[in-house]
Length: 148
Image 1 (cartoon, one colour):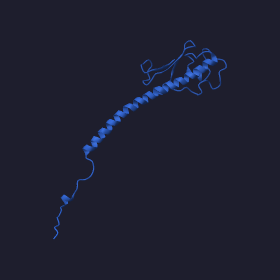
Image 2 (cartoon, rainbow, N blue to C red):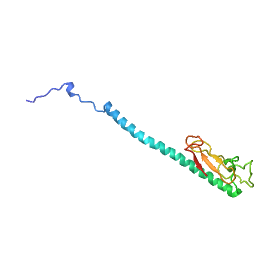
Image 3 (cartoon, helix red, strand yellow):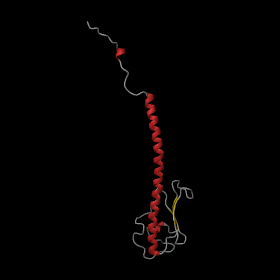
Image 4 (cartoon, rainbow, N blue to C red):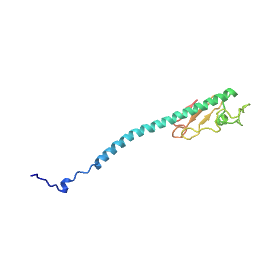
């Protein structure tokens, strides 16, 4: 004769499948640490890319200034500014035969990647400096970007 073992409801229950709260918290802590390491590096690279973009834009201004110099044997002075690359200056030494469309190839000046206008200085019509105030937006600090 076969003996059947009777099981009660308490012994028939299994432990529910899933994760405990502690396991979930450990996984979240590990993921948080990974994101913190990656996030710092991404922000650093983003800042470096903006600095590189500013240098490229200043090189574009430099090419336009060289074209201006070749046509007029002088650079625009500080009072004329970079605006002289877009439209004929009305003060200082006014160049003759200014081309329609200017030298920059755009209808307006471009701000640096940090949202500030580039600074241009030229006192003697021969030597100039283009600079960006950098990430902090303040002139005369260590993060300024300058091209001469």
